[in-house]
Figure (cartoon, rainbow, N blue to C red):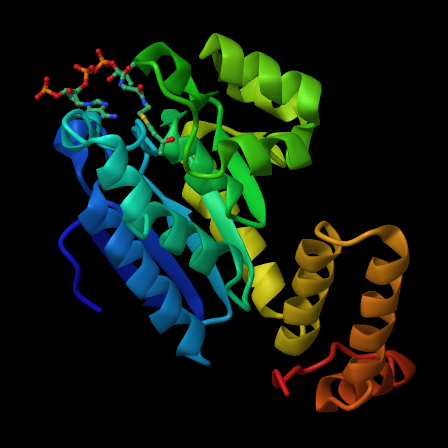
Length: 259
Ligand code: CAA
């Protein structure tokens, strides 16, 4: 997989996708969004890939959508287009495998919104998060007004959206925006460690568990519980369920095949 604005490396079942526009702090333009959408489809179809890490490297995650590319857009341009960002973010959020965002430096605007599509966020201690769109006279248009309140609650989300203020990695941890904070030089090591743990689990069970959480957030509790029950039952048709329970009884580690 060769792209111009992202780098994709696959090692031992873990795909690492690195945003690669360093001159503009990894600002996200249409090409980045299209390449992210493409990579989400390709990695999704690659059975050898068991977990995905999205990162911007050790200096910056992404400083948001590309403001220079957006500045001259009209309302009609925006309203009439199928927004590449929405397509990319939906494809990433709905990947059938675990996705970890490994975030160093700024994760702002669309960059912060990109992290919200991941299942888990690991922040370097130098990370800063914010939705500064309000300072540009717009609002977060990459899912920030929807995914952020679902993650951290409406009150804190509104404070971030209305103020445009940045918060530190520690504050992001405190409000539940990230799962853990690690020293900057340990970021990728920690993300890979977590990715390997996920990759060793049953891939179908991970996919259905992810689906239960994601779909469940769109349902009322009763519907969500019914959906969970169906997915739970479905897993009893997998070889991984037989292997997982047999391994427990035989007091050994399971060897999951993802089927
Ligand atoms: N779009 C385009 N270019 C950007 C950019 C962005 N979002 N963020 C930074 N850059 C560019 C700068 O223009 C600059 O380029 P030049 O060297 O050619 O001037 C280069 O990256 C380095 O940036 P700075 O010189 O500004 O670096 P800094 O360290 O002084 O400041 C910063 C860093 C605080 C992140 C500052 O760059 C900044 O505020 N960036 C914009 C953040 C922002 O408003 N993001 C939201 C964008 S809108 C959005 O995302 C919409 C949406 O909902 C999808």
